[in-house]
Image (cartoon, rainbow, N blue to C red; front, side):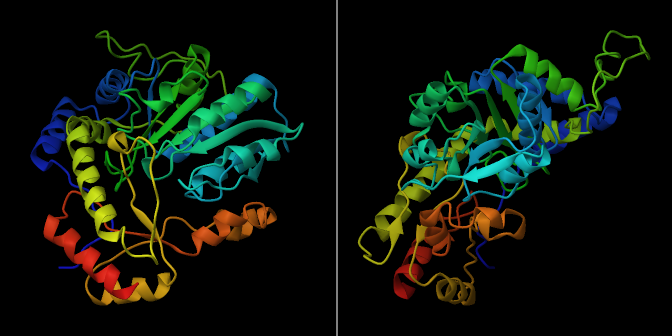
Length: 375
């Protein structure tokens, strides 16, 4: 059987128990398990506010939209972002008729603070920092820049479930306005698809609850959980259908129990990779600050012969991937071409190694052997 690049491991029987509870209770939508997941996530991360959503993508959209509403931003205003990310990050900016400006990347493949500061203009309103692969990068310096220039900071923590620095979740750091997580199908905390948005302030958190539920000021669960059903509500905003559901939350609650244990295994695999590739002069390993607490959603290498390597490994039953293509190569963001030359160069040589709970030590040794043979 081929080795997959990303493959979630579900604790099936426990997940099914949680799903069964939803089905037997007759509550599969928002509420019940989604509320429980929000509370457990706040305990785990230290966030003050949390709202369970159907994806990280919609969370990023709500983050931009609410900040725009509350701060009087105009169409055409700018948000500094990264071109090395899944396209959702930058689509969230475009959804609100704002313009992504692309900062270059550092050696961690996260935002380069020096380039971020160079890209600030009078139209700049915010920065979206992506914790690429689970790495915290130079987030502390980005926070300083945002404070200095009075910019809002959105943390796209799609890869960061379980990442900590000295035991503290980076999304809770002072200066981070909102953090958005992903519990998509192959993430460290996998469900079918869902996510979480965590604001630093109560007003934005309350707006999220309404905007994510069609603008309604009191959701069905809130109107039903005291034994009677109060049918009447108002619609305060033109909202969306972005809420998460109880079935996904039931799976998430089970997966959360094992997140730290499984992230520890990811770090073991990464250490094996690092040791196995360190003496190959043609391979560049992506470093991680605070590596002993990194979630390591991805493990990538920079190689000279990516396409050839992908094909040879595939022939050997080892499926690798590419995360990510420089977003300015996509038609919708082609206006950013040339803004981040290092990101463009790196993106053409990145290859993602298999990293998941199904890998054995022997699998990892085989991968290392084959990569070193072909690079």
